[in-house]
Image (cartoon, helix red, strand yellow):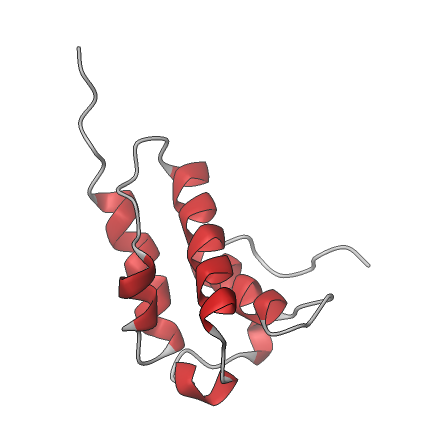
Length: 98
């Protein structure tokens, strides 16, 4: 089944969270931005996986997006915090050498 939700940063991050949580057919429209990350009971390996997915989302939007650290994702309290991390990484690209 193809994705039927708009490919916004918010939806991509929510889908990434759902995939890390074991949902192979995510629907990000069902995940509230206010949901607590602690509710997922992710292991450290799952947080590393989510960090990688968040970095891929950011890099797809902005090739020079700042790198998101696993510690930052671990520090996210809500789903919205993860979305904000990706948006911040996109908005603050790492300068390239001329």
